[in-house]
Image (cartoon, rainbow, N blue to C red; front, top):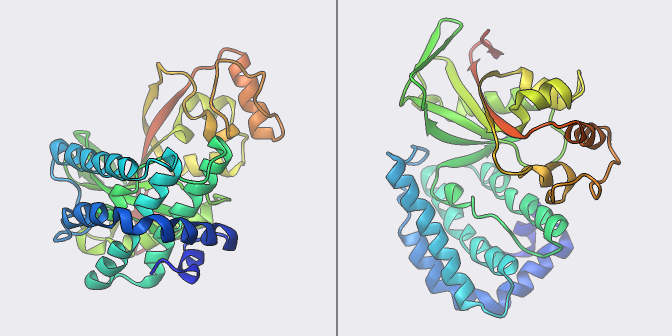
Length: 311
């Protein structure tokens, strides 16, 4: 499964695929029992159902943390990034077989696995290291999230009391489809509408009628950024405008999303931040003029029958 052809289908360059194969040839057999223990404990009986409660989600997170700690203990000669890559990449054959068993196409499998190549590039850029620095993949392996076009979707219960739009009402605890935005390049309205429709078709058995509620919790929805940073008519502004932003949260931390824009962590000053794009220059100006940081929560209702967002 983890051969060069399939790794390239996952979005890795030829050079990166060869390096992964080299790492695997040395270490896969060492962590094989750890991978089996982890994947044997994944419940595949109810695919794409959210965790039943917060405790179940916390247990899944802890299980993933323990998995990576065990992998890193078994591979002390590798740094934390490379060992994380070896650990997660060796769970891929499990997901391939699981997708086959539940009738999900190879196309969707490889589209979902491309997230590894995106995260590898982020790790190279941010940490100058060959590997991974995040562990969010567990929600993919535990059949909670999948890539559908440009966006990735995770099934989550609605946490607010109620939200209504266009004659449709979503109540607390009902399913929403939280979209993640991988760093895979351009983000256009057409791409997003295509993803919304793919999500509608994929999750149709779970839906009430023809409407899918899509949410996102992201720095792209923080209203001060929308008002003072993103250019009118930009793809980022157009994406945010698709949603009704119903929550904004200032961050007490420093600019933790800085790396997403500048490929660098924020050290409290803009002096070392690159200003080579209009977005970066706009953010630098915003920060230098006392702008604060945060995230927003947005929601939209997509009607799969009419292929439009309800207003």
